[in-house]
Length: 96
Image: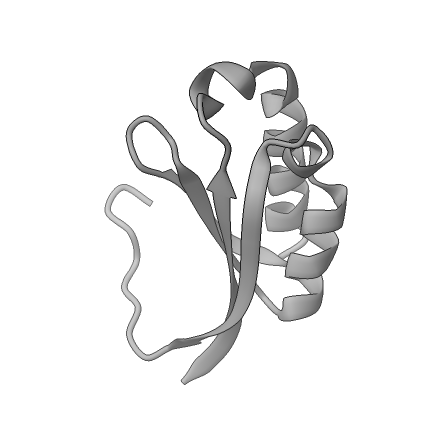
């Protein structure tokens, strides 16, 4: 069993239209953490997006990400949680 950290965001209303000026910075931060091996998976939830889920190597990486994320600085995240995420099964993603 592997223990990771799950960051869950709840976004503000109208996130799809409000995120545009901050999206490139948010995605660049995701890429930075993924390239460093500190982030394994990230994606929006809902259609239109109502939140996001990100899987980090550890809680410290998740906390640092929250502090640096342009979405948070812009007030686009209404709440977040960071919880231990114990992986008991995993398969490569289709197309990965």
